[in-house]
Image (cartoon, rainbow, N blue to C red; front, top):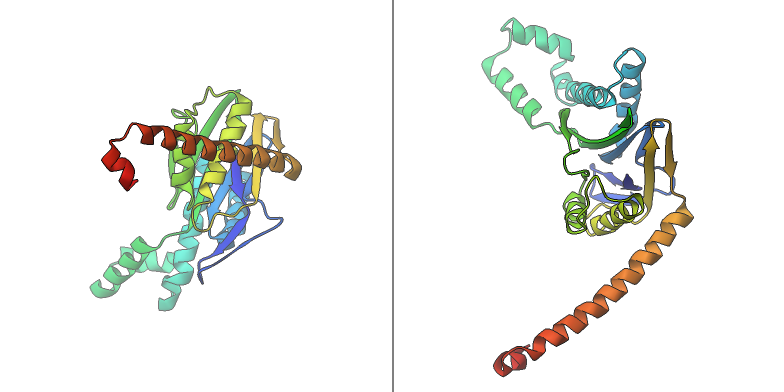
Length: 256
């Protein structure tokens, strides 16, 4: 799993690279959660996730993360919408169930609640009973399993990352070294999107009892390999275009 360290504030169009704050959270040695979106929500989300885990016998971290996101969304709706009317969520549900809301009030509140978006996006990487699994979790707690293709991405650079993994023929059978490099390459491609920072974290879940985080030096080494590949690719592209031009009609060569 890979992530940047950039913080994007949704109050203003502002973003900055954070030197120390990783977006990859180790829940257990065999469970790592990657996050994107508004960073102000992430500490609350993680606290709620751990609270649910402490009171539950459920070992399914994906469902717990989904429930934590749903609970946090409910809290934020209460704070940003319902408190304007002087209500908490339970009071609103009581009034709504009893039919004590004016139709216009009820419609307005429901519309605002429906439009509310909790800007948090999660990807989980898990090894359980020797089996690896990848899930995406989106507002309001919708879970999708990506085991069939063996990868996913989220955040503003999602499309760039996914296109890179598709072009690399990445599958769940890709050898580990290739997998790590292709994931790094996908992260570099995602940097074309607004809000994706240059600093990178990579954490590899290798078993239920162990995950390994690459050091900054190791990440820098991958970066050098990637930069050299880009130079070779640019050189090859120029050569291909030069060779292709030779086969064009003379009228088109004059225009190229």
